[in-house]
Image 1 (cartoon, rainbow, N blue to C red):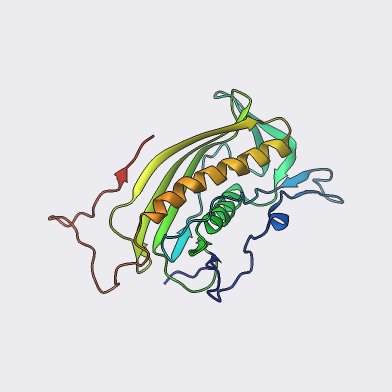
Image 2 (spheres, helix red, strand yellow; image 1 turned 90 degrees about the horizontal axis):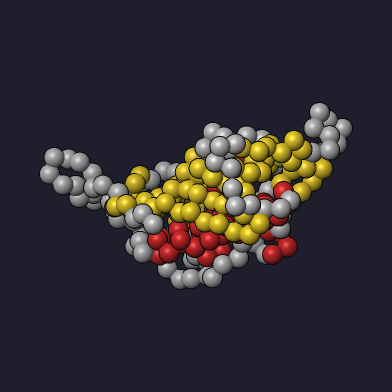
Length: 236
């Protein structure tokens, strides 16, 4: 059984520590470090972006910790990606690992869009088995060659039963572009908006899944030969 701490699921009486709710609590955080080796550096965090709340979707969804391209996976913020050269800020840093930042922001985005669904991040703690997994592999998350913020990722939405992937899911590449990067703050705001757009895509896929997982006592149907059904790819 997964140990999870859900976002959302209004009225379910579940733990709400770390739940992101309300515009005031979802703003970008930029704080200045002092009295340490990184004196003068600013920490930034991604924000949950409001979307259209919709009915439907599984009861519980687990957002897996995203896979991040090694060039992006660093404390200092990658401010630009020209395709041949990465520009890394000498002063601005993420307040947590980028995988954790993206995972929790995406979970908050999904909980806002699917208010009847409990959304949690891998390795969070409370007790529930997910009926779906959302996985993300991020290859671009910065200002691109055009000077506009860009997000490029592979998104997977997979139904689950008894804490394991079940049946057919979807796999698609999502490439999004926003406004000009400008300052680090403008770039982080723009990237938060793009994550919200990606959450719109994921929420639409989740709403197509059944609200309840198949019974754990009912084994998944597999084709002859014992192979599990392949993930159905949906490229853009």
